[in-house]
Length: 409
Image (cartoon, rainbow, N blue to C red; front, side):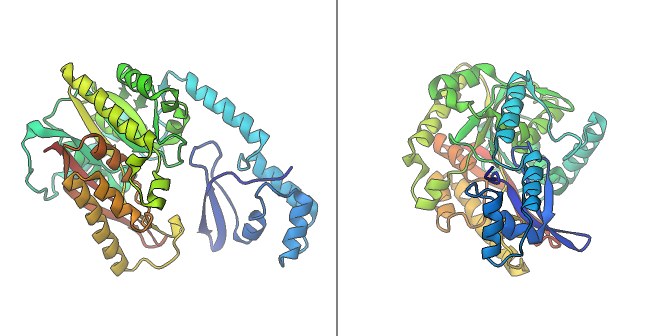
Protein backbone atom coordinates (compact mmCIF):
# COMPACT_ATOMS: atom_id res chain seq x y z
CA UNK A 1 0.00 0.00 0.00
CA UNK A 2 1.21 3.49 -0.87
CA UNK A 3 -0.43 5.64 1.80
CA UNK A 4 -1.91 9.01 0.88
CA UNK A 5 -3.40 11.35 3.45
CA UNK A 6 -6.87 12.57 2.59
CA UNK A 7 -7.61 16.29 2.24
CA UNK A 8 -7.98 17.23 5.90
CA UNK A 9 -7.73 20.30 8.09
CA UNK A 10 -4.36 19.86 9.85
CA UNK A 11 -3.47 22.40 12.52
CA UNK A 12 -0.94 22.56 15.38
CA UNK A 13 -2.31 22.20 18.90
CA UNK A 14 -0.89 21.86 22.39
CA UNK A 15 -2.17 19.50 25.08
CA UNK A 16 -0.72 19.41 28.57
CA UNK A 17 2.54 20.89 27.32
CA UNK A 18 2.86 18.46 24.40
CA UNK A 19 2.63 19.57 20.76
CA UNK A 20 0.49 17.72 18.23
CA UNK A 21 -0.94 17.94 14.74
CA UNK A 22 -4.73 17.94 14.93
CA UNK A 23 -6.58 16.27 12.04
CA UNK A 24 -10.14 17.34 11.29
CA UNK A 25 -12.29 15.86 8.54
CA UNK A 26 -14.61 18.56 7.19
CA UNK A 27 -17.02 16.04 5.70
CA UNK A 28 -17.39 14.36 9.07
CA UNK A 29 -16.50 10.78 8.20
CA UNK A 30 -13.29 10.43 10.20
CA UNK A 31 -13.20 11.29 13.88
CA UNK A 32 -10.81 14.06 14.93
CA UNK A 33 -7.33 12.74 15.63
CA UNK A 34 -3.97 14.01 16.86
CA UNK A 35 -0.43 12.84 16.20
CA UNK A 36 2.79 14.11 17.82
CA UNK A 37 4.22 17.18 16.08
CA UNK A 38 7.52 15.40 15.40
CA UNK A 39 5.66 13.05 13.02
CA UNK A 40 5.20 15.95 10.58
CA UNK A 41 8.18 15.21 8.27
CA UNK A 42 7.23 11.53 8.22
CA UNK A 43 3.58 12.20 7.39
CA UNK A 44 4.73 14.56 4.65
CA UNK A 45 5.86 11.43 2.79
CA UNK A 46 2.33 9.99 2.84
CA UNK A 47 1.55 11.34 -0.62
CA UNK A 48 0.60 8.14 -2.41
CA UNK A 49 3.93 7.67 -4.22
CA UNK A 50 5.78 5.44 -1.72
CA UNK A 51 5.16 2.19 0.11
CA UNK A 52 6.34 1.64 3.69
CA UNK A 53 9.83 0.57 2.66
CA UNK A 54 10.31 3.61 0.42
CA UNK A 55 9.00 5.91 3.16
CA UNK A 56 11.56 4.51 5.60
CA UNK A 57 14.38 4.97 3.10
CA UNK A 58 13.37 8.49 2.03
CA UNK A 59 12.87 9.59 5.62
CA UNK A 60 16.40 8.46 6.49
CA UNK A 61 17.87 10.09 3.36
CA UNK A 62 16.31 13.40 4.41
CA UNK A 63 18.01 13.37 7.78
CA UNK A 64 15.47 11.50 9.85
CA UNK A 65 16.25 8.63 12.16
CA UNK A 66 16.32 5.03 10.97
CA UNK A 67 12.78 3.80 11.55
CA UNK A 68 11.75 0.15 11.68
CA UNK A 69 9.55 -0.64 8.69
CA UNK A 70 7.13 -2.31 11.07
CA UNK A 71 6.63 1.03 12.86
CA UNK A 72 5.66 2.75 9.61
CA UNK A 73 3.40 -0.12 8.60
CA UNK A 74 1.61 0.08 11.95
CA UNK A 75 1.21 3.84 11.56
CA UNK A 76 -0.27 3.32 8.08
CA UNK A 77 -2.68 0.74 9.47
CA UNK A 78 -3.80 3.04 12.29
CA UNK A 79 -4.37 5.98 9.96
CA UNK A 80 -6.27 3.79 7.53
CA UNK A 81 -8.42 2.37 10.30
CA UNK A 82 -9.16 5.95 11.35
CA UNK A 83 -10.31 6.75 7.78
CA UNK A 84 -7.59 9.35 7.37
CA UNK A 85 -6.07 7.83 4.24
CA UNK A 86 -7.34 7.88 0.67
CA UNK A 87 -7.67 4.11 0.43
CA UNK A 88 -10.08 1.32 -0.54
CA UNK A 89 -11.11 1.11 3.11
CA UNK A 90 -12.08 4.77 3.15
CA UNK A 91 -13.78 4.52 -0.27
CA UNK A 92 -15.99 1.67 0.96
CA UNK A 93 -16.92 3.55 4.12
CA UNK A 94 -17.61 6.73 2.17
CA UNK A 95 -19.90 4.89 -0.23
CA UNK A 96 -21.79 3.33 2.67
CA UNK A 97 -22.25 6.62 4.53
CA UNK A 98 -23.31 8.58 1.45
CA UNK A 99 -25.83 5.85 0.68
CA UNK A 100 -27.21 6.05 4.20
CA UNK A 101 -27.54 9.83 3.96
CA UNK A 102 -29.28 9.63 0.58
CA UNK A 103 -31.83 7.23 2.10
CA UNK A 104 -32.56 9.51 5.07
CA UNK A 105 -35.99 11.15 4.67
CA UNK A 106 -34.65 14.34 6.28
CA UNK A 107 -31.27 15.88 7.04
CA UNK A 108 -30.59 15.11 10.74
CA UNK A 109 -29.56 17.86 13.17
CA UNK A 110 -25.83 17.15 13.13
CA UNK A 111 -24.79 19.79 15.66
CA UNK A 112 -27.54 19.41 18.25
CA UNK A 113 -25.83 18.62 21.55
CA UNK A 114 -22.51 19.85 20.17
CA UNK A 115 -22.83 23.47 19.02
CA UNK A 116 -26.13 24.09 20.78
CA UNK A 117 -28.42 22.24 23.23
CA UNK A 118 -30.31 19.27 21.86
CA UNK A 119 -33.15 19.76 24.35
CA UNK A 120 -35.78 22.21 23.02
CA UNK A 121 -36.31 23.99 26.36
CA UNK A 122 -32.59 24.62 26.90
CA UNK A 123 -32.17 25.73 23.31
CA UNK A 124 -35.18 28.04 23.54
CA UNK A 125 -33.72 29.63 26.65
CA UNK A 126 -30.36 30.14 24.95
CA UNK A 127 -31.86 31.75 21.85
CA UNK A 128 -34.13 33.90 23.98
CA UNK A 129 -31.08 35.29 25.75
CA UNK A 130 -29.46 36.03 22.39
CA UNK A 131 -32.49 38.04 21.29
CA UNK A 132 -32.41 39.96 24.56
CA UNK A 133 -28.74 40.79 23.97
CA UNK A 134 -29.50 41.77 20.39
CA UNK A 135 -32.06 44.31 21.60
CA UNK A 136 -29.22 46.28 23.21
CA UNK A 137 -27.36 46.85 19.92
CA UNK A 138 -27.42 50.36 18.48
CA UNK A 139 -28.84 49.58 15.05
CA UNK A 140 -28.86 52.31 12.39
CA UNK A 141 -32.20 53.48 11.05
CA UNK A 142 -33.31 51.50 8.03
CA UNK A 143 -32.58 53.00 4.62
CA UNK A 144 -35.77 51.41 3.28
CA UNK A 145 -39.37 50.78 4.18
CA UNK A 146 -40.40 47.35 5.46
CA UNK A 147 -42.11 46.42 2.19
CA UNK A 148 -38.71 46.40 0.44
CA UNK A 149 -37.02 43.99 2.89
CA UNK A 150 -35.94 40.85 1.03
CA UNK A 151 -33.84 38.99 3.58
CA UNK A 152 -30.75 39.04 5.77
CA UNK A 153 -27.07 38.26 5.91
CA UNK A 154 -26.45 36.26 9.07
CA UNK A 155 -23.27 34.82 10.63
CA UNK A 156 -22.85 31.07 10.95
CA UNK A 157 -20.19 31.20 13.64
CA UNK A 158 -20.97 28.95 16.62
CA UNK A 159 -23.75 30.26 18.83
CA UNK A 160 -21.63 30.88 21.93
CA UNK A 161 -19.41 33.34 20.06
CA UNK A 162 -21.87 34.99 17.72
CA UNK A 163 -25.38 34.15 18.88
CA UNK A 164 -26.47 37.71 19.67
CA UNK A 165 -25.26 39.04 16.31
CA UNK A 166 -27.06 36.16 14.60
CA UNK A 167 -30.25 36.93 16.55
CA UNK A 168 -29.98 40.58 15.51
CA UNK A 169 -30.34 39.61 11.85
CA UNK A 170 -33.42 37.47 12.49
CA UNK A 171 -34.92 40.21 14.63
CA UNK A 172 -35.25 42.26 11.44
CA UNK A 173 -37.70 39.62 10.21
CA UNK A 174 -39.91 39.94 13.31
CA UNK A 175 -42.84 41.53 11.48
CA UNK A 176 -42.26 39.86 8.13
CA UNK A 177 -44.04 36.91 6.54
CA UNK A 178 -42.31 34.63 4.06
CA UNK A 179 -43.47 31.46 2.33
CA UNK A 180 -40.00 30.27 1.39
CA UNK A 181 -36.39 31.15 2.12
CA UNK A 182 -33.55 30.55 -0.31
CA UNK A 183 -30.60 29.92 2.01
CA UNK A 184 -27.08 30.19 0.63
CA UNK A 185 -24.55 28.65 2.99
CA UNK A 186 -20.91 27.72 2.54
CA UNK A 187 -19.54 24.28 1.65
CA UNK A 188 -16.44 24.49 3.82
CA UNK A 189 -15.23 21.11 2.57
CA UNK A 190 -15.54 22.22 -1.06
CA UNK A 191 -17.63 20.89 -3.96
CA UNK A 192 -16.86 20.27 -7.62
CA UNK A 193 -19.86 22.10 -9.09
CA UNK A 194 -19.95 25.61 -7.56
CA UNK A 195 -23.35 25.02 -5.91
CA UNK A 196 -24.79 22.09 -4.00
CA UNK A 197 -28.48 21.80 -3.20
CA UNK A 198 -30.22 19.23 -1.04
CA UNK A 199 -33.80 18.12 -1.61
CA UNK A 200 -34.14 17.41 2.10
CA UNK A 201 -35.93 19.06 4.99
CA UNK A 202 -33.71 19.99 7.94
CA UNK A 203 -34.41 18.53 11.38
CA UNK A 204 -33.94 20.75 14.45
CA UNK A 205 -34.77 20.26 18.15
CA UNK A 206 -37.83 22.48 17.58
CA UNK A 207 -39.16 20.56 14.59
CA UNK A 208 -38.37 20.14 10.92
CA UNK A 209 -37.73 23.01 8.53
CA UNK A 210 -39.56 21.79 5.41
CA UNK A 211 -37.77 21.88 2.08
CA UNK A 212 -39.57 23.44 -0.87
CA UNK A 213 -39.50 20.36 -3.09
CA UNK A 214 -41.09 22.11 -6.06
CA UNK A 215 -38.56 24.95 -5.96
CA UNK A 216 -35.67 22.49 -5.76
CA UNK A 217 -37.14 20.50 -8.64
CA UNK A 218 -37.50 23.67 -10.73
CA UNK A 219 -33.85 24.52 -10.09
CA UNK A 220 -32.66 21.00 -10.82
CA UNK A 221 -34.70 20.77 -14.03
CA UNK A 222 -32.73 23.76 -15.31
CA UNK A 223 -29.32 23.05 -13.74
CA UNK A 224 -29.26 19.27 -13.98
CA UNK A 225 -28.42 16.43 -11.63
CA UNK A 226 -25.12 18.03 -10.69
CA UNK A 227 -27.01 20.41 -8.40
CA UNK A 228 -27.61 17.61 -5.88
CA UNK A 229 -24.89 15.17 -6.94
CA UNK A 230 -22.79 16.06 -3.88
CA UNK A 231 -25.63 16.69 -1.44
CA UNK A 232 -23.80 14.51 1.09
CA UNK A 233 -21.76 17.60 2.07
CA UNK A 234 -24.92 18.95 3.74
CA UNK A 235 -24.63 16.15 6.29
CA UNK A 236 -21.78 17.77 8.24
CA UNK A 237 -22.12 21.42 7.21
CA UNK A 238 -23.40 23.81 9.86
CA UNK A 239 -24.09 27.01 7.92
CA UNK A 240 -27.63 26.04 6.88
CA UNK A 241 -28.43 24.02 10.00
CA UNK A 242 -27.95 27.10 12.19
CA UNK A 243 -30.41 29.04 10.01
CA UNK A 244 -32.95 26.23 10.26
CA UNK A 245 -32.69 26.33 14.06
CA UNK A 246 -33.43 30.06 14.21
CA UNK A 247 -36.30 29.82 11.72
CA UNK A 248 -37.90 27.01 13.70
CA UNK A 249 -37.53 29.06 16.89
CA UNK A 250 -39.50 31.94 15.37
CA UNK A 251 -43.16 30.91 15.40
CA UNK A 252 -44.21 33.10 12.48
CA UNK A 253 -41.46 31.69 10.24
CA UNK A 254 -41.31 28.03 11.23
CA UNK A 255 -43.68 26.99 8.44
CA UNK A 256 -41.67 28.77 5.76
CA UNK A 257 -40.17 26.28 3.33
CA UNK A 258 -36.43 26.32 2.75
CA UNK A 259 -34.21 25.95 -0.31
CA UNK A 260 -30.84 24.83 1.11
CA UNK A 261 -27.90 25.56 -1.18
CA UNK A 262 -24.23 25.39 -0.27
CA UNK A 263 -21.71 27.45 -2.24
CA UNK A 264 -18.22 26.30 -3.02
CA UNK A 265 -15.38 28.79 -3.14
CA UNK A 266 -14.83 30.60 -6.44
CA UNK A 267 -11.14 29.87 -6.03
CA UNK A 268 -10.03 29.88 -9.66
CA UNK A 269 -11.75 33.20 -10.33
CA UNK A 270 -10.17 34.70 -7.21
CA UNK A 271 -6.72 33.45 -8.18
CA UNK A 272 -7.01 34.70 -11.77
CA UNK A 273 -8.68 37.98 -10.79
CA UNK A 274 -11.54 37.52 -13.27
CA UNK A 275 -15.25 37.88 -12.69
CA UNK A 276 -17.02 34.71 -11.53
CA UNK A 277 -19.61 35.48 -14.21
CA UNK A 278 -16.98 34.45 -16.77
CA UNK A 279 -17.50 30.94 -15.43
CA UNK A 280 -20.52 29.59 -17.35
CA UNK A 281 -21.58 27.41 -14.40
CA UNK A 282 -21.72 30.38 -12.02
CA UNK A 283 -23.33 32.74 -14.53
CA UNK A 284 -26.03 30.25 -15.53
CA UNK A 285 -26.82 29.38 -11.91
CA UNK A 286 -27.25 33.05 -10.97
CA UNK A 287 -29.60 33.52 -13.92
CA UNK A 288 -31.52 30.36 -13.08
CA UNK A 289 -31.88 31.25 -9.41
CA UNK A 290 -33.31 34.62 -10.36
CA UNK A 291 -35.65 33.02 -12.87
CA UNK A 292 -37.13 30.58 -10.36
CA UNK A 293 -37.42 33.18 -7.58
CA UNK A 294 -39.30 35.54 -9.92
CA UNK A 295 -41.48 32.66 -11.07
CA UNK A 296 -42.39 31.88 -7.45
CA UNK A 297 -43.09 35.52 -6.71
CA UNK A 298 -45.35 35.73 -9.76
CA UNK A 299 -47.43 33.00 -8.10
CA UNK A 300 -47.84 35.20 -5.04
CA UNK A 301 -45.16 33.40 -3.03
CA UNK A 302 -43.16 35.59 -0.66
CA UNK A 303 -39.55 34.52 -1.23
CA UNK A 304 -36.88 35.58 1.26
CA UNK A 305 -33.10 35.43 0.78
CA UNK A 306 -30.61 34.46 3.49
CA UNK A 307 -26.82 34.38 3.19
CA UNK A 308 -25.33 32.38 6.06
CA UNK A 309 -21.72 33.52 6.05
CA UNK A 310 -18.75 34.63 8.12
CA UNK A 311 -15.96 37.03 7.19
CA UNK A 312 -12.22 36.77 7.89
CA UNK A 313 -10.48 33.68 9.25
CA UNK A 314 -6.95 34.69 10.27
CA UNK A 315 -4.32 33.26 12.60
CA UNK A 316 -2.71 30.01 13.64
CA UNK A 317 -5.85 27.92 13.17
CA UNK A 318 -5.91 29.00 9.55
CA UNK A 319 -2.26 28.52 8.67
CA UNK A 320 -0.95 31.97 9.68
CA UNK A 321 1.48 31.87 12.59
CA UNK A 322 2.23 35.62 12.65
CA UNK A 323 1.09 37.43 15.78
CA UNK A 324 -2.37 38.95 15.85
CA UNK A 325 -1.68 42.33 17.39
CA UNK A 326 -4.36 44.90 18.10
CA UNK A 327 -3.13 46.85 15.09
CA UNK A 328 -3.63 43.83 12.87
CA UNK A 329 -7.10 43.15 14.26
CA UNK A 330 -7.98 46.75 13.47
CA UNK A 331 -6.62 46.33 9.94
CA UNK A 332 -8.76 43.22 9.50
CA UNK A 333 -11.82 45.17 10.61
CA UNK A 334 -11.02 47.97 8.18
CA UNK A 335 -10.74 45.51 5.29
CA UNK A 336 -13.89 43.67 6.37
CA UNK A 337 -15.87 46.89 6.43
CA UNK A 338 -14.63 47.74 2.92
CA UNK A 339 -15.88 44.33 1.79
CA UNK A 340 -19.27 44.88 3.45
CA UNK A 341 -19.50 48.34 1.86
CA UNK A 342 -19.45 46.62 -1.54
CA UNK A 343 -22.52 44.64 -0.48
CA UNK A 344 -24.18 47.83 0.75
CA UNK A 345 -23.66 49.27 -2.74
CA UNK A 346 -25.11 46.10 -4.27
CA UNK A 347 -22.00 45.55 -6.39
CA UNK A 348 -21.11 41.90 -6.92
CA UNK A 349 -18.11 42.82 -9.05
CA UNK A 350 -16.68 45.25 -6.47
CA UNK A 351 -17.17 42.57 -3.83
CA UNK A 352 -15.19 40.10 -5.94
CA UNK A 353 -12.49 42.62 -6.81
CA UNK A 354 -11.95 43.28 -3.11
CA UNK A 355 -11.38 39.58 -2.46
CA UNK A 356 -9.30 38.97 -5.59
CA UNK A 357 -6.89 41.85 -4.96
CA UNK A 358 -4.89 39.70 -2.53
CA UNK A 359 -6.29 36.26 -3.46
CA UNK A 360 -8.51 36.29 -0.38
CA UNK A 361 -5.63 36.47 2.08
CA UNK A 362 -8.11 36.92 4.96
CA UNK A 363 -9.99 33.70 4.09
CA UNK A 364 -13.36 35.46 3.82
CA UNK A 365 -15.90 32.69 3.33
CA UNK A 366 -18.81 35.08 2.62
CA UNK A 367 -17.57 35.79 -0.90
CA UNK A 368 -19.37 33.14 -3.03
CA UNK A 369 -22.77 33.38 -1.34
CA UNK A 370 -22.88 37.18 -1.33
CA UNK A 371 -21.57 37.41 -4.88
CA UNK A 372 -24.26 34.98 -6.05
CA UNK A 373 -27.08 36.92 -4.41
CA UNK A 374 -25.88 40.29 -5.70
CA UNK A 375 -25.25 38.95 -9.20
CA UNK A 376 -28.62 37.19 -9.36
CA UNK A 377 -30.49 40.15 -7.89
CA UNK A 378 -28.69 43.38 -8.86
CA UNK A 379 -31.56 45.37 -7.36
CA UNK A 380 -30.46 44.23 -3.89
CA UNK A 381 -28.69 46.48 -1.44
CA UNK A 382 -27.44 45.59 2.05
CA UNK A 383 -27.31 47.57 5.26
CA UNK A 384 -24.84 46.71 8.00
CA UNK A 385 -26.39 46.11 11.41
CA UNK A 386 -23.45 44.90 13.50
CA UNK A 387 -19.84 43.82 12.98
CA UNK A 388 -17.85 41.72 15.45
CA UNK A 389 -14.69 39.67 15.88
CA UNK A 390 -14.27 36.47 17.86
CA UNK A 391 -10.63 36.75 18.90
CA UNK A 392 -8.98 33.81 20.66
CA UNK A 393 -5.76 35.15 22.13
CA UNK A 394 -4.55 31.76 23.34
CA UNK A 395 -4.97 30.26 19.87
CA UNK A 396 -3.73 33.44 18.13
CA UNK A 397 -6.75 33.28 15.81
CA UNK A 398 -9.74 35.41 14.91
CA UNK A 399 -13.00 34.94 13.02
CA UNK A 400 -14.99 38.04 12.09
CA UNK A 401 -18.67 38.21 11.21
CA UNK A 402 -21.55 40.62 10.68
CA UNK A 403 -25.31 40.80 10.33
CA UNK A 404 -26.99 42.80 7.57
CA UNK A 405 -30.38 43.37 6.06
CA UNK A 406 -31.06 42.87 2.36
CA UNK A 407 -33.54 45.16 0.69
CA UNK A 408 -34.67 46.05 -2.81
CA UNK A 409 -33.41 49.38 -4.08
